[in-house]
Length: 386
Image (cartoon, rainbow, N blue to C red; front, side, top):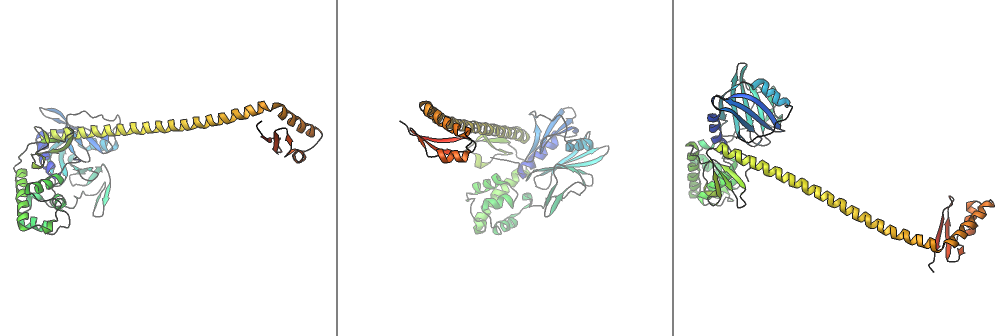
């Protein structure tokens, strides 16, 4: 199941967003969750449009999201700099999972950069690309994101739109990974598109690429070039892919052979498909969380019920023991009364508990034997049942 947008998805999405938000003006910004923003734009002659920016995707949405009563400090900062700003351009950085919004207002020009990989991030920069604010400070060995610093792009990967056959061959020959992993990471394609190349070339995706023959590499490159031509020519057929349970498992900008046997649901734009896919994914996740909480609550109730049953069994057992003791006391009341009377008489004559113990411990009164007498006056006896 797809968890985030690929570079190919973003390639098509940025072009749609550029058309949808042409001359759009920033109206409001909300931070609707810990790592998610909602931006409201006003588009001339069209009205308001809302953009969701999440760690793994972004899109214009037609679904209502609740907003907090009090805006976060980051949302306030974005409002301060961007309210009333017009969108000049929306673009994908190289072929990476990065989308830049270039904005302009009377107070200056700004860049809002969204990174849709890892934990995701949203960075606000001035015209010199100095960071004014960001969702999260981040640090790597070769890169750091923090307020006051010049924004640096992550180390660039290869742009698949520019790869020719010799470079394609060198990438495969030099890889230690599986074929599908090499196509996914070294060519920046994304997993499903890498599998599509293997599927169309009829080559096992688990093969070691360095062991492929020249003919096999040529087959793969031919499939690769057809994919690139589809991208460059912007041949679109946005759709959602459904599994046997009617659940969405992928959102793609054009038809893929690997999904030919799956049920498909078409959309006019990739943005609409992305919006539908991820709202359904979020609802499913909320349902899972709800079910998990119910199961946790049920397990707690069952645990309490088990503890209560064990407690009842213990009380019933003790009740039986106490009843037996009570019956013995009742049956031997006169003998016990005589023992207590004898001990009290010794106390009245001035004997201490030590002396009383020596005289009475081990002594038998009918079927009752005195086992112990403590200094606080407690008497332990053994009763032989008649």
